[in-house]
Length: 362
Image 1: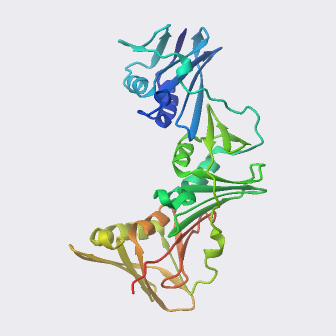
Image 2: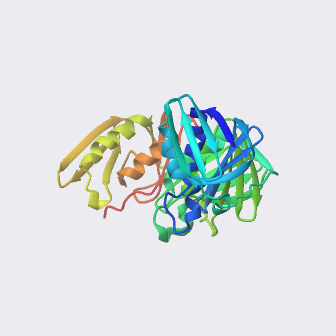
Image 3: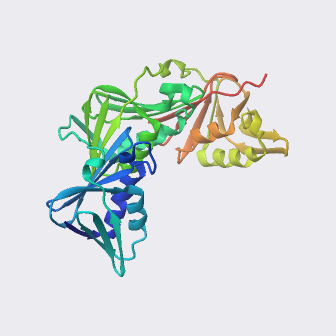
């Protein structure tokens, strides 16, 4: 079998598939990339058990069949190729990779040693790929990282009539993105946060087609088809903890707040939740932080509204910066109290909402 195609095309598709394949595993087959040669197509596939990925690439091919090769090794070779095109000469025991003046041979593994993956060809719904990626990307940061937090380590994806909403929370903060678009499905899914990272990278322009089967979500977009193993468990009723009343509201450029917090937080005490203090009064937000190396402060002008004239709060600096990060333009921060959740909204994109619980200062 022989395959000829642009190096850039192979590198981009292989990069996505290789990234999800474990370089080392107690199951040696999981570290393998399956190469399939079809009429006019090269098919790459692999799995990490939580996520299966298949890339179908149009190419000049001769022959038909399947083989397997260590994914990490082939990835290193392809990334270093010098020419604009690459040729894969697939024999019974070796894969020869040649590009421009370079050539190398890799030992092949029987195709049956690699995971046998099946992908649905029947799809029940679809959504613009970039819209889904945007929703997932805006909230992923709020998912928990600690193993004991179980369902908090996933991103909830709500698929219902005329809306697609992504939500993540770790119990101390929350992020939600409500897209006014329908996939045609009616389901609430819980996707592992690590799988969300790969979906955001894979999704591009064009329709993303979706199918549900058991505890697996299949998604096809462009050259890629993905099986995502869904998490089990009950996601918390997050809507009941979002405040409805805000006695103090301020509006400012999101970048202005993010940059000020980053500067001041250099002095924050890392052993005290990376604390920064905010004091808002008369249209001025004073941001301060103090730690073993000294003290920092910065004042920024804000448009202040609400029934109360001032408020003092403290936050984990990273949590506050993460909440503001997805906002490009104007931000509104709404404060429900000194110990109750604060809400950040994007005035240019009302689909996004972030909530952060202040630190207790007493």
